[in-house]
Every structure is written in structure tokens, then in C-alpha cells.
Length: 273
Image 1 (tube, rainbow, N blue to C red):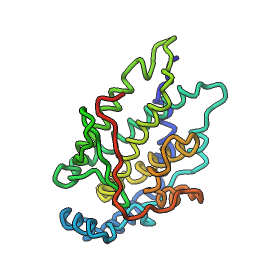
Image 2 (spheres, one colour):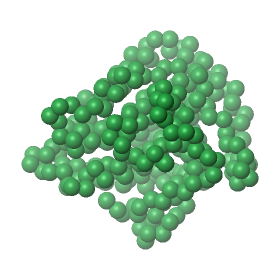
Image 3 (spheres, helix red, strand yellow):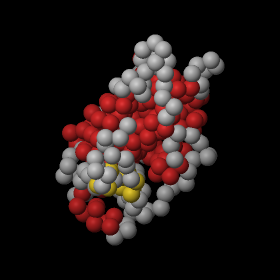
Image 4 (cartoon, rainbow, N blue to C red):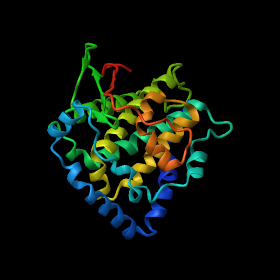
């Protein structure tokens, strides 16, 4: 069966952001930038010093994405909830495919805007909030600690290869989705969630300075509500951004904040499908 195009979905996700961008743009961005500037000193601490603090069990950097100014332009929750609800008569796999393609495109684009700040030396580990560290399995099945840009390249390469595979994401008439399609989508969304978590944790300052925080919040809300609707990502993965989820969506069912203990998430080989 043919997966529906993501262009309409892309427009629906970002239409509310575009509308909000036209209202109070300068004052909101000014507040956000001032908030970021107040925290700039702690954010710009040398990476090596902060890694030593983390190893010693001290608190992590301030969460700039939870500053009130950064949350000023949150999206109407009801609109996004309607967006992720499965329409009557539409195939479930086609619905998952369209959202997965849209989220991949958006996350890839957002990361691309700040990728020059995500370097092998600046981000020697793939980390997220709560001192979480993500590990990858190489082609030989060996668990590997890689720098964030390398990890994210693995994620994007794997996802691009998967969504371009006609046997997995069919686009031609009469081609069917594989029986394992939902599990493949679960893996893709889990990996994309890692990328979003890293952006919030390590690069939100750059995102805010570029004026893209509302767009990033939109993508996160989309991914979060899709997960809430269909239970696609393990709660142990999403708990690290539970505070942001509650702040943006006001969801009282959000997971509690994770402990400060460093966690390692194992990944499947880059050659896996």
C-alpha cells in the first residue's frame, strides 16, 4: 500500500508556528535571548570541566529550554492532538509512515542549522538531559561510545536508508508494509528522540539565538503527542524530557524527572534494518 505524502502533514505541523511568528515576534525573541544571555556564562563553561563535574555527581547545566521566555510561544495542544489522531478509514501503517517521514525531515533540518556547533571535540559523547549517555553498536555488534556528531550521522544515515527502502516504506501501488513495520518505526522514533534530547541538552542556546526555539518545541510536541497516542517509545527513553513535556503540554501524566545517574542506551548495529 502507498504511504501518503508528508507535505500536507508538514504544513499542518508548522502552520501554527508560522502564525505565532507574526505576533509579538521581536518582544518574545528579545525575552528569550535575554534569558539565554543570563545563563551564557554557565553554558559556555569548558566541556572538559563540566564532564569532570558530571563524573563527580554534581548537577548538570541549567536547562535553558525550561526558561519561561523559551516556552512563551507554545503550540495549541488541541490542534496537535487532532493532528496525530488516526482518521477513520486510514491504514494505521500509512499513518505511522507519514508522521515518521515528517518528523525525520523536521529533526534533520533543525539539527542541520546547529550542526556546525556540534563537533567531535565539543560533544565527545552523545548525551542528553539527566546526564544520560547514548551508546551505539558498530557493524560487528560491539558497543561503542561515539561522539555526538558521529552518533547523529549514524541515526540519519540509518533512517534515510530505511525510509528509502521500498520494501519497508512502500510508495508504489499494491506494495504492502512489512509485518515488522511498527517495530521499525519504533526504532526510528527512539533514535530521533535521542537527537532531539541532545539538541535540547547541548545546543538549545544556539537554537534560541537563531530564533528556532518555537520550531524545535513544535517538533518535540509533535513527537511527544504521537508517542502518547500510540505508545511508540519506551517511557525510560522519554523521562529525561518529562519536565519539558509538562511545561509545553501541561500533561500531568508526564514521567517524573530521571535520576542523575548516567545511563547508557544500547543501539543496534548501523547495518541493521
